[in-house]
Amino acid sequence: MANPTYTLITGASSGIGKAIAWYCGSLGMNLILVSLPDEGLSQVANEIAEKHKVKTVYFETDLSKLDAPKEVYTWTQSKGLDINILINDAGVAGASVFEKSDFKYIDDRILVNIRALVMLTRLFLPVLKTHSDSFILNVGSLAGFFPIPYKSLYSASKVFVLYFSKALRCELKGTGVNISVLCPNGVRTNPTTNTRINSHGKVGRITEQSADFVARKGIDGMLKHKFMIIPGGINHFLLLLNKIIPFSVQQKILVREFLKEVKVTCNY
Ligand SMILES: NC(=O)c1ccc[n+]([C@@H]2O[C@H](COP(=O)([O-])OP(=O)(O)OC[C@H]3O[C@@H](n4cnc5c(N)ncnc54)[C@H](OP(=O)(O)O)[C@@H]3O)[C@@H](O)[C@H]2O)c1
Image (cartoon, rainbow, N blue to C red; front, side, top):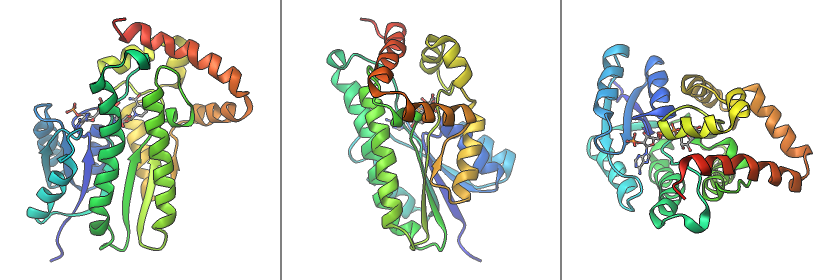
C-alpha cells in the first residue's frame, strides 16, 4: 500500500490556518499542524482526526526562531511523513508607528511572515517534487497590494509573499509543483484583529470575511491550480480602485484609515 500523504499547515492553531485545517480535514487530507507551543494545537489535531477520520500530527515551535523551519523539516523526515501540500499560513499582523516599533515587533514580521515561509518552501520543495501534482499555498494579504502607512512592515512582508510566489511559480513550471497565493482582507480571527476591523467602522464591516469562507476559497482555488486567490467580490473592487485612484489620493485615505488602527491598538 502507498504511503499516506500529508498536508502541512503552519499557523494551524487559530484563525485562518485553523479554518484551513478543518476544511482540508473535511476533504479527507491527512494533516501536519504547526504553530506556537501551548496554544491548543493538540486539541485542534485531535478534534479534526476524530470528526473527519483522517491522520493528524502536530509540531509546536516558534517559527521566528532561525532553526525552527529546519526543525519542522527534520521532524517530518524522521517520522517518514510524506508531504504533497505545504500551506504557509503563520503570520503576524499589527499596526504601529515604525519609529516607535520595538525590535521584537519588527523581527516577528520579517522572521515569521517572510523568512519562515521562504525556508519551509526551500526545505520541502524536493519532497513536493517527488509527487506528480503537489501544491504550495502561501497566505498573503490584500495589504500586499497597498503600501500602507502604519502597517509598513506588514504590507511590505505581504508584497514579498506575492512576488516571491509569483516568481517561483514561473521557476517551477513543468515540475508538478503548483504555487498559489491567498490574499484575504479583514478576517475576525483574534481579539486584536477584531479591534482593528472595528476601528474602520463601516468600511471594516463591508469588507470583512469569515475565516471559513477564506479557507474554502483558498483551498478550492489551490486545488484548481489558480495562482492568485482573492476571496470576495468587494476585494476585487478595491483592487480596481487601487488601479484608478491616483497614488497621492490613496495615501491620504490610507493614512486616515490606518491611523485609526494605531490609536486603538497601540499605547502611544
Ligand atoms: N485576519 C486577517 O484579517 C488577515 C487578513 C489578511 C491576511 N491574513 C494572514 O492570514 C494568516 C493568518 O492570520 P490570522 O488572522 O488567522 O492570525 P491568527 O489568528 O493570529 O493566527 C496566526 C497563526 O499563526 C501562528 N503563529 C504566529 N506567530 C507564530 C510563530 N512565531 N511561530 C509559529 N506560529 C506562529 C499562530 O500560532 P498561535 O495560535 O500558537 O499563536 C496562529 O496559529 C497570516 O499570514 C495573516 O497575515 C490575515
